[in-house]
Image 1 (cartoon, rainbow, N blue to C red):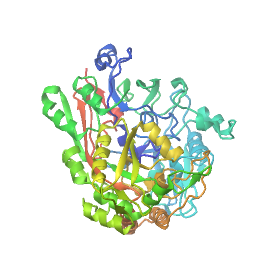
Image 2 (image 1 turned 180 degrees about the vertical axis):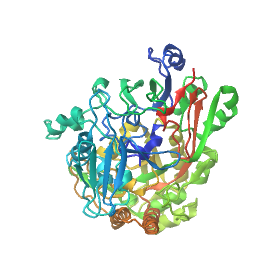
Image 3 (image 1 turned 90 degrees about the vertical axis):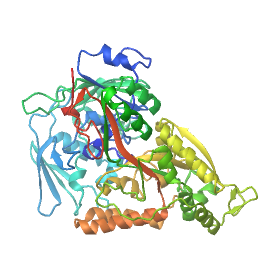
Image 4 (image 1 turned 180 degrees about the horizontal axis):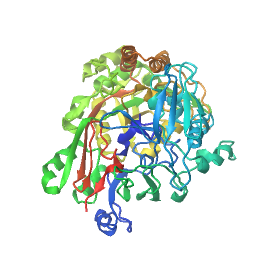
Length: 590
């Protein structure tokens, strides 16, 4: 899920970024400058929409993130085969009762600053960061096990081995241990020292204002510079552990440049003019344009499977108050918490029209919160096909009514009107909420569109909690438990009814519904179960509840599409996307 801070194996597709237009030595938008002024070393020009929120891997909950280039974990997932592979650990052993995993670390690992990377770093990362109750993050929700929500134990066996043990059987445990490993020598003091607010200094460590030279990493690249609203530049990590079969150090590409652009229209212009080496994901309309130009343009258009992302809208169901003030207007909160209201909205949205007009027919209508790439996806789930009359019927059953101008009113005569936000950098999402507004106007609802920057929107979802409705895309994968941070009622990304984050002002009167509790219990049961048929049954029940209650209204996801210049060699485009998942193997043709 989008909100997870994992920058390791299961979110490899987060390496795919979007649009760049900033030169190395100029501040104006001049993509060709990147190609000519720094041609002395192999480099790849890539890009992203919007500035990063943090360089702290524990606190990051965004995708794409620069941290995906900078950090690795004990294990990784091969994006082509989906199999787990050794990474910082050279091997692992699982006990017969499947409750203990023992890893053996590679020899002579180093951090980017040359310090040894050891078992002590792994112990510190899990014990003092991920499992620290004073450092709240999405990762804690994924690591907590069973009804007691207990963490696994972790102990150093010897100088090269570390052992993790779960308090009870936990099916996704091994995959969970692919989390990013962080440096003890650079961060230990920030954990033990407290700020004036009584919280660990770690919570403000390695923010975007940090000198890149202070950020110690273990991945193929390290951050060389960051200029807000303009660019990030990465240099090859000279202490990275990987070598090819001939003993040559990897990665081969010396420098990667990310630019920060305002929208995907700019991205398309930059790629077509030769200023970008890669553009992913592609919008459907861009795919058709670039496919026609493929041979003449000297680039290759890539097509994968269904994009592992759910695009959805959600209403704020939080009935809590902060400092005596309701997070959501009580009148509107009453609407949002009425399941027939949410179902009426779902029936009113013409998803086929979204697919035809905005996705150029390349999209897939979603009827589940678990993605089709997962073996636990429920075929034939409840579908909210476009039916405005059904919407009106549900609204009337819920006590709403219409005036003589066909405007929808609630039982007290209040005009039904709410705000719907999405991130302003994404033109496609803006187009989607525009159509949703049109669709809902046909059943008498007034929708105020409020595009805002991605970082501001995430701040509202995570911290402010004072929003009404939003549209976003959230990544997922094969393992449902990776979304436990979203679906457990106390999960740190349970955005539709969010509890306060650590260090934030408390709420009074937050209500957790029975169906939310049931989903949370099912996620716990699913993680405890090793029988695949039973796991599928459990997660099938989850999908039935979410499609009935609609905390998310799933919309459409597209095929995974990208494009790379032909001088980028070694690209292996997986079904799940992410042209740069094997960045260490890629080369730039002279």
